[in-house]
Length: 59
Image 1 (cartoon, rainbow, N blue to C red):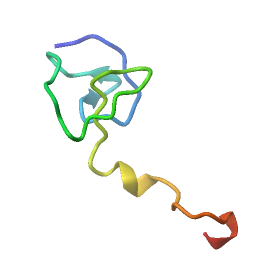
Image 2: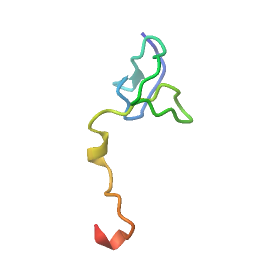
Image 3: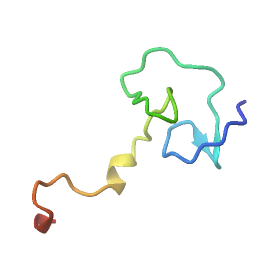
Image 4: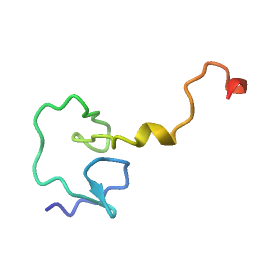
């Protein structure tokens, strides 16, 4: 188990720690970012974001 702190909404984050035991191979859901090469968003992440609209008054 990893003791790497993690506060991202990632599939492998639990109670502030990264629970990924080893790097994962190619995964279509992976979205590497500046903080983590294995960042994989949780499936419910899209439910907590603002709508994608071109005009902010349309929300």
